[in-house]
Length: 214
Image 1 (spheres, rainbow, N blue to C red):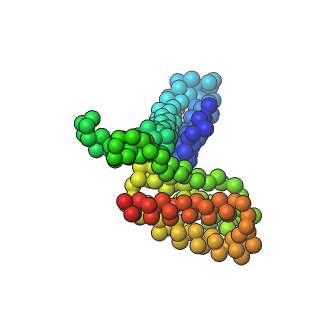
Image 2: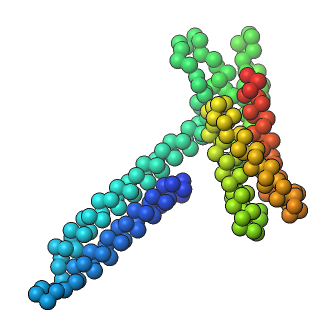
């Protein structure tokens, strides 16, 4: 059974592997059933050889899709740990005396006398769902492209990779204004789905400004 946490690449490879196995299975039976004037009956040796020739690449492709799925699990766990404050991004290796305790407690700070004080808790990334906003296929494709670009930034914000965010932010803003034009033209500017997108873009701009000011 396929796992729900497979990404698109893993799903595509998984089903390609299944199709290769299915095609090889059918081809083996067809080839084994072909008769000639001199030879009749089912040729099981031919069937086995064809099955073997398709099973090897088929299972290799499925195995590769599993590797991608496991890497996706590792990525999701990393994001989950960082969000819960269990991992500090870019924490340098140092002795216990030089550890920055505030890096391990994002919602808290350390005062000069060594006591904890309340601080600003990190806002969770507003990951967007692929709920339909447009009925038109071309407009919907443009909208889903924007959603994909925004959600792809989540990992880079979690690890605070400023360079990658800066590199991808221009494309996100360009798509945002293109889709925004379509939204206002269709009179959907107050639709809850679009308001979630606006909130996500505002979050991205605020968090990037915060990182830029560090």
